[in-house]
Image 1: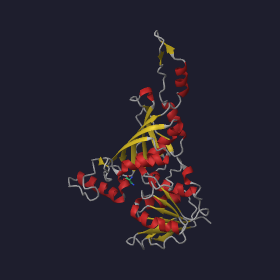
Image 2: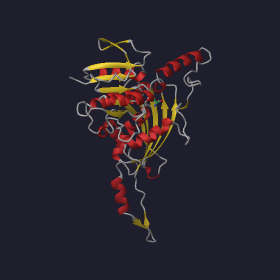
Image 3: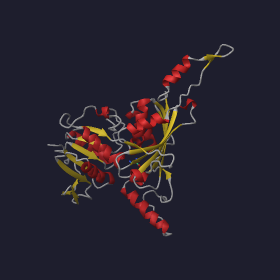
Image 4: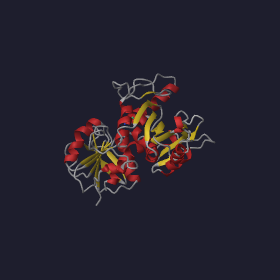
Amino acid sequence: SGPSVAIVGVTGAVGQEFLSVLSDRDFPYRSLKLLASKRSAGKSVSYQDRTFTVQELTADSFDDVDIALFSAGGSISKQFGPIAVDKGAIVVDNSSAFRMVDGVPLVIPEVNPEAMDGIKVGKKKGALIANPNCSTIICLMAATPLHRHAKVTRMVVSTYQAASGAAAAAMHELELQTREVLEGKPPTCNIFKQQYAFNLFSHNAPVLGNGYNEEEMKMVKETRKIWNDMNVKVTATCIRVPVMRAHAESVNLQFEKPLDELSILEKSRADCNRDMRGSVIQIEAKTGISEDTAREILKAAPGVVVIDDRTSNHFPTPLEVSSKDDVAVGRIRQDVSQEGNHGLDIFVCGDQVRKGAALNAVQIAELLL
Ligand code: 2RA
């Protein structure tokens, strides 16, 4: 009785993770269709005690599909997404093709489920929902619970992005290069045209006219759409680092009002002293963003785990979050560089393939049921 589900791009890293997540979460599909390019058609995939045959993606692939999970690149989404919608499927698209299109929901289920706009299987025939970029998802999973308590007016993000973001081939090349370098051989550089092992470099996305690369502008634009706030100031620097499948991100937040010092701030303003000349001395109330409050908010946040042990210097790491659902947050501390301490610095790690792509998309699909 459940929905018929199609996976587009099933042989890719995210496509494979779709299968893992659907299985882990016992997604109640009635039927499952595995779609990929002609090159992969005919391959057998054993899954949940059954053997599936990968079918070639064509315009006729969606006749009986209720939910289509896409992760085969932007051009495939642009070509086949609208076809699937016309056939009545609800598309959850992991590519960037439609994310910034007005009217297309851009959804992180724990953050802005209301953006789903009530779309449900059976209730609405044909729709497209966009999965945000992985680095945006991982950042906002931690930043949003804080933003909900005290409006974020500015966010500065530095990312340390894993190989998996550049597909499985990049993961394989990182492993190959690491072996080659250790054996004193010249590294094989097919994916990034420069050495990746024991190195890091500015994200490989194209650089735009403003000097930002596409990955950084995705963080800026997607944050504004997901928070429905065109005024929040966001800047990002995205770096590719030699880590397999989990992104790490340093996030600095500036709040419009203190998380929990607002009453003190207002009270102190009301109790201003007057100096000898009778002018008002603005008492600089302690308006610091309470680290403890931030920590409690993050501990209560869905899909987030706090790893913040200063004594043992134990904070989130990519390896610790790899293949896991939750995003890990630590290094929670007041930003000493901001006046009145209206700032917070945090450090976030999340699995790029899972919560950064496949898990988020399947959670969106669960909201369609
Ligand atoms: C990356 N965000 O990590 C991309 C993957 N879509 O390169």
